[in-house]
Image (tube, rainbow, N blue to C red; front, side, top):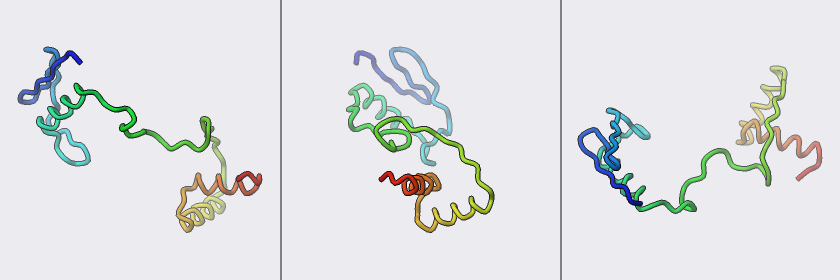
Length: 107
C-alpha cells in the first residue's frame, strides 16, 4: 500500500486525512489505546491473509442458503420444546430441524 498512517494524541491520520479517535472506546471491555490503533494500522498496511480472517455470521446448514420459516406454537408445545432442547444441550432451531429430519426420514 502506498498510504501512511500516523497517530497523535486522540487523532488517527492516513494520507493527511484526519479521523478522531473517540474517547473511552473499548473492545471486550478493554480500552482501545493509541498504541493498539498504531498496531492495527501497521497490520492493515502490510495486508491481511484472507484465509486467516475469522468467518462471520452463522455457520452454514447445508450446501446452499437457508430459509427461515416462522412457526406458531401454543405455550405447552413451546415449553416442551424449550425443555427438551435444554435437556439435550441444543438450540430450539436445532431441535426443530432434528424433529423434521426424523419425521421426513432425511439424515
